[in-house]
Image (tube, rainbow over all chains, first blue to last red; front, top):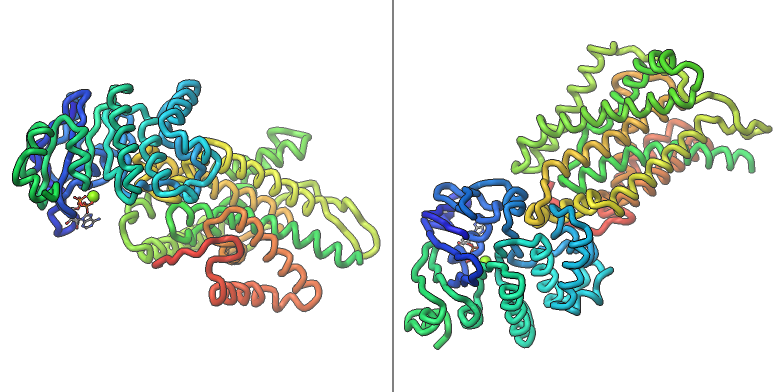
Amino acid sequence: MLEIRNLHVHYGAVKALKGISLAVGSGQIVALIGANGAGKSTSLRAISGIADVSSGEIIFDGIDITNKPPHVIVFAGISHAPEGRMIFANLTTRENLEMGAYLRKDKGEIRKDIEYLFSIFPKLKERINQPGGKLSGGEQQMLAIGRALLARPKLLLLDEPSLGIAPILVKTIFQKIVEINKELQTTILLVEQNAHMALSIADYGYVMETGEIRLHAPASELAQNEEVKKAYLGM
Amino acid sequence: MNQLLQQIINGISLGSIYALIALGYTMIYGILRFINFAHGDVFMIGAFVGFYSAPHISKLVGGSIIFSGILVMLLAMLICSLLGVTIEKFAYKPLRSRPKLTVLITAIGVSLFLEYGGQLIFGPDPKLFPTIVPSMAVVDTQNLVIGSNSIVAIVTAAILMLILRFIVFNTKMGAAMRAVSYNHQAAALMGININSIISFTFVLGSSLAAAAAILYSSVYPSINPLMGIFPGLKAFIAAVLGGIGNIYGAALGGLIIGLTETFVTGYLSPTYRDAISFGILILILLFKPSGIMGKFEAEKV
Ligand SMILES: Nc1ncnc2c1ncn2[C@@H]1O[C@H](COP(=O)(O)OP(=O)(O)OP(=O)(O)O)[C@@H](O)[C@H]1O
Ligand SMILES: [Mg+2]
């Protein structure tokens, strides 16, 4: 579904991605793990068109989307719940969700999708008319995921959904991610610091280190890998 | 008593016009975080569109002065929208990733270009703006004259502001504008085309400035290519006073500046009118740079 070939991205003089290649198959959950500054977020930003690619290719469903404007990429079926959530603090929860569905015209279906979302994240329903800035961190994270889902993406990019969230909620969020993957058949590329959790729900995993892919293997294998255990699983 | 009422009506009428212009400053600031110093000159162009088109339009439409007045205003709004969008595309867009100071200086350049271009094309001397709003005294008693101009200005500005409020707070496009003004990148990730939202904002701001120009020129009918400077500055002060970026603040700021100026002119002396407005600007920048309704946001300009 998604294929990245030899991707390079730099911010000024900082080389953030030094030729990474990876693939995400339809229906999979793929985890991208690695230390701080490894280039995980940059990879997602390049896919969704908000970071400039200096060379390499990003192919989605057979189409080259490298350096296409973000709205074109959303239209193609990719949506991105970014690092730090980026909730519109000045818009209500409902408006935030409606922005997620910005390119859709099917009003009735959007309403149904919002109802469905409330069944996954009941907390959001209680906050429906409150400004996004007034939501707690966990609620904002649910809103960020929900907002991205409302585009009805084929591929959902999630950047650290567990960041800054109470441990008890982390488990719930990961359960919901699996639920979304299974019930909506949404393919997911998941970036996480919490490598243990990420590998436990993923089909396949990539390990990044300073702008390069260091290792990749089926998630269950990665979780057993000595190097990964030592560096990322704290064992 | 009547004199007070007179001042209040005059103040609200001038204030509503400032408010319309201030809304353009504040919306463009909200989206792009810079002061479009050419905005007052877009206002001036609006007045000249009215000046040149009104005689033709009233000949075309014939009798109804109200209908032709509305047409003149709509035409001015249309042409200024195009002008605003063009300015953004050619002068500001190429600089979008540059420091705000660069854009600010460019805006001043565009402003000078329009002012001196205007002098070249329209001629530097003042022209008499045609009667678009039927001019008569609606109320005329001792010490109290309420002209139809003032009433038309107040009512038209109120209607336009209500329409704007509807667009910004009750439509999808308006929500997208607010999303973009909060965070460009997050908005882009929603599939919002940032460039079209920016253009749309310039359409709204410039057309309100054009409407303001028609109303203003109907009250003060001597127009010239430099006429945008002062109303532009006053409206800018109004936007800062209300809280730059906040559309309710711009409306409120416009009214406050309009009333203040009218009162100073009426009770003190017209000499102090401009000084008071600039005094307000200095005070607000010193003591509450975020304005009456704005939240404070440190901005590196
Ligand atoms: N806007 C930016 N300007 C300059 N350098 C940047 C920018 N964003 C990221 N970088 C640099 O690019 C590299 C990769 O950053 P990136 O955010 O992709 O890492 P990450 O793997 O997501 O890290 P984290 O786990 O901390 O989120 C880092 O060296 C970082 O300092
Ligand atoms: Mg990151």
